[in-house]
Length: 163
Image (cartoon, rainbow, N blue to C red; front, side):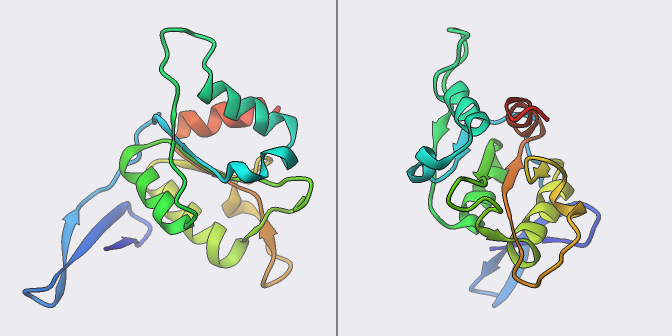
């Protein structure tokens, strides 16, 4: 599958092997306002700041007993995790932590491309302190924290971070 934006929304194309061509199968892809899935490497939880811990605990153990907890789905491939987030809503996080205070994902070839696609699909993409797409690169391999997905989920996470 190829997911593509030219700056006017997002479309998904699937390879049809009988034609040898990609066919538009997912026109005008839009992320739900709120999802039910969170995606992050919880192996780094020990190193997260308190705001990220608070947010993850809030989706795993909601205070409102009428709200179902979010499902955790983490493939370990940003492309696959973000693709699922676009299709079903939710949030993908690769936040900064005490071992990687600037984040782990590279701005120019991981953060920016995914942030652009997610925003074009109606979602939000943040470093935790601002829009990913507003970060001015200072190095070709610059790293940034990444929080992206459904607008309401990203807003909830940012609220836990004090933003």
